[in-house]
Image (cartoon, rainbow, N blue to C red; front, side):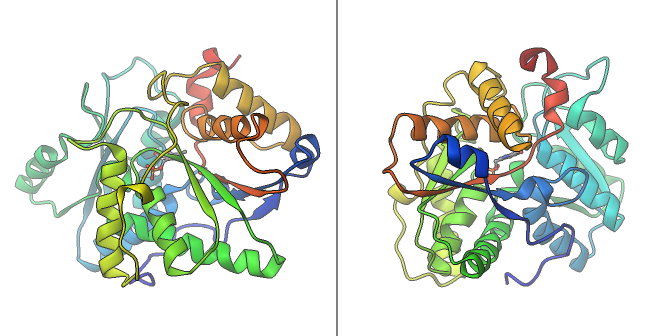
Length: 325
Ligand SMILES: Cc1ncc(COP(=O)(O)O)c(C=O)c1O
């Protein structure tokens, strides 16, 4: 199952020590997993999920893909790049109205050849079914990738990622006590949780919630729990999952999705100025802020090894230039 993926990216992504920040916060050893360097038109976490979707779509003879997200969706940009690489038509449903000028991820998705539809308030894939029907009436064979790529197949990308990390940790003779990352549609979180249990990695997941709104009629934790239960069966993991395995860390999401505050700006600058690595203002910047807050307020025991899983998102910095200056 985990082997059924189409090679789209650059893996393994580097695992590096953040040397300067480990000196600054000297009670901790800080590391970073560079999924911002996963390839495909400026990288990101969705490349891992897309390897599974593209394999599935190609092996079943589909000729077009639809997916959905916010106007600055990294997931949609990476889907557009995947489709360009393998010769599938890409249709995107993006929230909001058509802007006068394209910028950031939206501009890149267009350059990558995606056919872009604007879907107003519906930024979480509510209109996928309708568009799929329309395209099918025109004779297309359409594969729908859910919002954020967060179903079990997408989550396999991060089950697989844990295997990759385990190999790197063994090679470097390291153990990570905590893994911080941005969680928004749940697939990354579910995949990491399943992977940690399947490959028996001793670590604590710290999913920083990005979007305080739920998804369909569920909270995000409930959606993650559903994926865990499905994954437990298909991967034959010997564990019974409960909502405690699916919880997120809230509090850094209180301004809402895509609202860039001084928190995100300060964390982007801190990593950029100390390590020469760029975060994004919606996801990884918010998650990195959450990690720094845990460190500064000593919510983590001294001496811990902490990994930040960088999930990408660089192009959105250009869209949010006003907030970041
Ligand atoms: C840069 C970045 N980080 C993290 C996430 C969250 O991943 P997930 O949707 O699997 O929770 C996303 C989702 O779009 C993203 O674009």
